[in-house]
Image 1 (cartoon, helix red, strand yellow):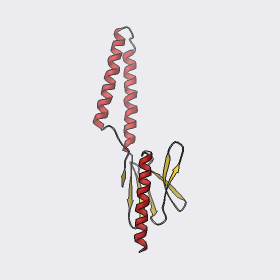
Image 2 (cartoon, rainbow, N blue to C red):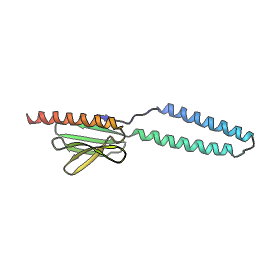
Image 3 (tube, helix red, strand yellow):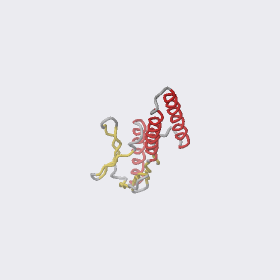
Length: 146
């Protein structure tokens, strides 16, 4: 499974949005300067730069993802863009959906270790992922017992 956060804008759409916001701010600043506020264009440039930076940071946060690989003996979670990787034995791993401050946390637990997955997903998506992982793990453990 490949878990990715939902993104509303492509890179091209983000650039368009930033361009429209900057154009509106600068248009308003030019009108303000025309009426005597000579510092309005300077503040509009600063504000447009700050908004563009903040939107870029928020958009890049959507690059994070997690790849969950399930085979006969292990469940592996690889976090991207970082290189964090965790491996659990399929027989011992437990899927837990715990209430936390502000949102439920989806945890994989085994041998005293816990790993939160899907933190960037919505509550319903985490619950669905929890059910799906539990079903897959039960089927895999049942097949191994035979």
